[in-house]
Length: 217
Picture 1: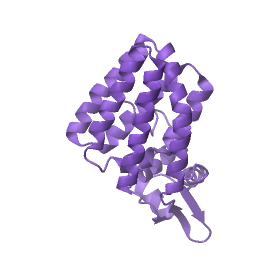
Picture 2: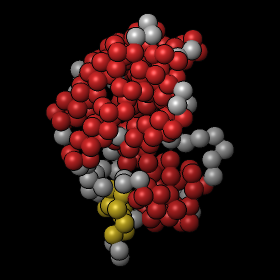
Picture 3: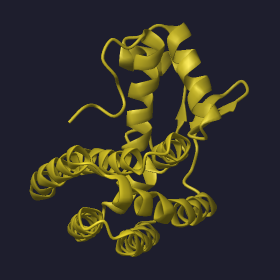
Picture 4: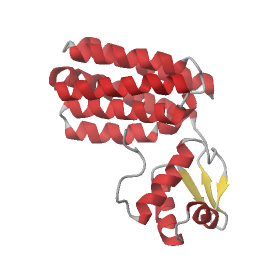
């Protein structure tokens, strides 16, 4: 599975952005923690300018807040933001997956099957980070299968924004098994070209996520 944060041949700014984002998403930099750029530069082995540019980008994405004369703070997890993301997902992903049920190719289906096969091993190993990445990749393939580039771009941004919440939801030991079954239900509906069943399975999946994150926070 490709790294969802750091891409091959990335610039120093892109490397800094990817590594800081991974630390925030996986709670190595915890919500509410104060950071400073000098410390980040030392940890990453990357110079001040690319780190500063990366921090600015992460601030625009809502993951950090820049505090004048103090540095920056990892934005605390907001239940309002969780609720807002879930509402937008429910509205848009039901439609997206119904399109995927109509338009998915054999290649899309095989890719989703491979992701779920890999996820089964990550569940066994209790590898939360890889499970988070597998979930992200699974939903990217659905968006690609829907064959609507605007919708795919919008959902990609949304899924990236919720990565940290997804990582937290995996604190519940039973949730990864639930997700695996939910993904299987979605995939089976897509295989059967049943848009309504795919939409219903996706709604159940998102509501399961809501229950898990509410329980974990």
